[in-house]
Length: 309
Image (cartoon, rainbow, N blue to C red; front, side):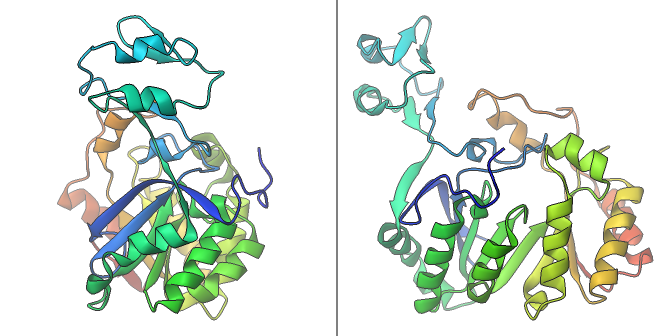
């Protein structure tokens, strides 16, 4: 595994796999959400599997393919059978992509420099005057931490409200550099038990808890909202929620906490990126009664500030 201080790209460039405009669930008001590639976690239920790898990948969209075989001549990059298959020892598919008339072959991300990304963000600045702003998500934004800090600085110079969605699995050094330029910080704390956290996310929870401890005992604690995604049979248990809330309340009695209902739609993305969804595809969103039960569990653990959907 890479060191937490290592950066897969230089601070002057970043790989972004999506920019979602007019987002309403990634912070206050209408927002522009920038999704950075690369994540150190491997959550079995990951909502954005296209953002896991740190390098640019080539994708095949079978619904767009017209089977014209224009790509077949690029036999150094692909093998063509019933469809194109990309050779693993190749990393430049630019010519193949240009040759595809239907857009069935595309890169999964785009490289931005600071000026280009800021310009993209500012396309929506008319909405930021009414409570909106920009949210940096992923993947894990801190995987490209040096670039993240620089784009945060540029956004603050433009008086743009900034938010981040993060696992907080990163170095405290990077967190300290970013905090002054963040207005809102969403942190996922998925599983409290260390063994289960490693089993279902692939990493230890110790660094995450230590970083949460730091920020909830700092001058930036009012910016923070801790979130737990409710995954059936995994994170969505009374035992897990009680343990998380007790830990958080001990750190800050006024901590802001949010439960995120399970989203079953993410499983459809996995075939596209050649990965397998790691949990039961038959799991469904929790209904209102079930959500109320989870709310009650957190409140019984002395939580004061529960954010409801």
